[in-house]
Image (tube, rainbow, N blue to C red; front, side, top):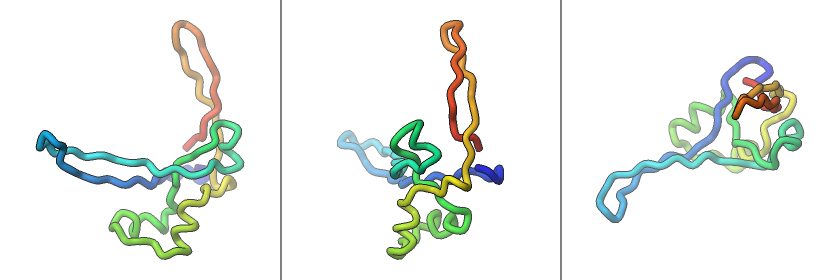
Length: 101
């Protein structure tokens, strides 16, 4: 993020019991359409929450329609930045562009 804050991804966690009777847990990371900054890299991005939205999200409160429309909208590009990451695989270096936090 441009202000060096943490990126807060929206996810849904759920526990259930399998047919075998084993307890299972799963997490679904919510995605939305990529914003202008990330669209050249991929057509989707995680749903990112603003700091002010965290408490209600983590407490499981159901957002009102206006909040829901904001939450599923792409995070504002102007609040994010993109950086480069160098990866090395099989003795070959490759430069990739990724959002930096």
